[in-house]
Image (cartoon, rainbow, N blue to C red; front, side, top):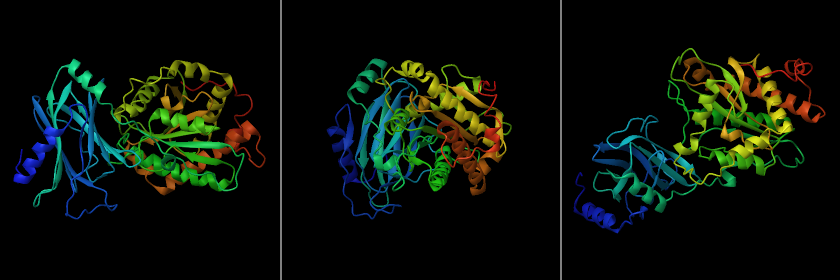
Length: 437
């Protein structure tokens, strides 16, 4: 370890000896060094790195000021979770994509209101040997240091049981926008921008992050829907914060939503420049094709990516799927998906077979018609460029507003809502049409 002076070494030793074995935490150390951050009093992480080998690996993160922290572990896959107060991460978006020693990768970001999280992916069972914060000394910043060593699976599981990470709590102010003033009895639409916070989602060739693209689009769509005066529009998140998949479903159900629309942007590794276009997905136990199945598997990993323990996850997916099979909800979900595909055909490039189905966890609200729209492929250079322009977002959001108008016009017969030609043309004689394969 690099020396930072006698005081720093003594403090580090004292902190290490005082740490409990299960949850490693330390109080913030006061410093007279001024903190420069985007938000006053918010610590800034300006550099992080991994050193060592498969016998001992060290994770180091430079901070503008010391912070409190808590470290816990999760199994299957093996993860080390570092919970922090709100931290501004001034790190490259590509940071953590490559590991070293006992770690394969790591990631960081907002986890909940006022909370940040770093998740380290381990090659196998590991033990936290030391965890401490060094105060700033001379020209050296404050540093969070975590030492890992190999251990047995049994020892790892025992530690994981003793140190459960803090659950993600989505506060009302972080995730829900208030209903329009004076509007009562309007159809409730919940917009769900995918990913967020520590879960960045897909990354484009130019570094565009899925979590940012879908939030920008969802905010524009929200404003346009509210402007019609016909809908009570809410959002699962309207900032860069992580919301667990189960919580997203709970939000829609608690609001008795008439429609849940989850917004994403896909990415593929093979044929990155060839595959592009939007697509719409509904829930099904049996995926309509391999592409839909693979996409659902990636999207369903969001909670694992954010370091959430799924061991106590209610085993009710089968029951939900059975409930969802009730004809009314299933029909409405399918009706909206088909209406949306019809509107998008004249507006944007569509992926081959744009209406698909798979087992997306975010769509499992058994009493809320739900669909997931993939705006395009961030792995495709043209799609990535288009998704970051206001002109393209304007056209796409207008098409979604038209599809939502058509859907509710047909479902509720709302006065003043007129079907567009594209939706009206498929209304009669096609109710039993099958999803394109």
